[in-house]
Length: 133
Picture 1 (cartoon, one colour):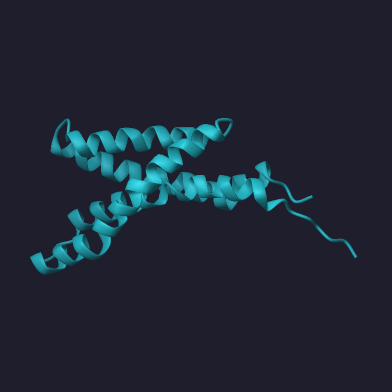
Picture 2 (cartoon, rainbow, N blue to C red):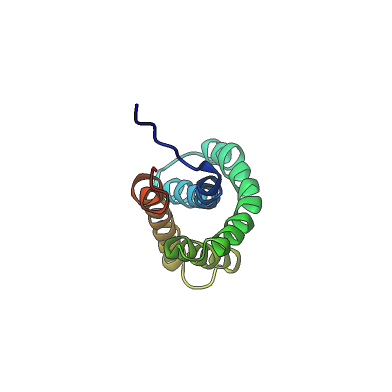
């Protein structure tokens, strides 16, 4: 019988590093979609109160953890780039520098690229970093 052994101790924290960037990416996607979809004030308040505020509180913890873990796995350049664009995204959100079009473009680009980077890790690249023995 051929049994394959996988060492989960190393890969778990690497997976967690990518998962730390999911809350800010979801905030970006939900915020971008809420600007596109027409809704009344009750719906907008519900989205803000039930979705965006809990995600923002989660992002307060997960962004620093993700940045620290990305420094731990600094050989994974995609993770480092994800941490870098997350820092730029947070700075743009806090300062609102630039025009409204630039702000909306930042939301869209960060959401799309963040989802692509996280999905590429879980669907393709993790098998290359942690092959099955």
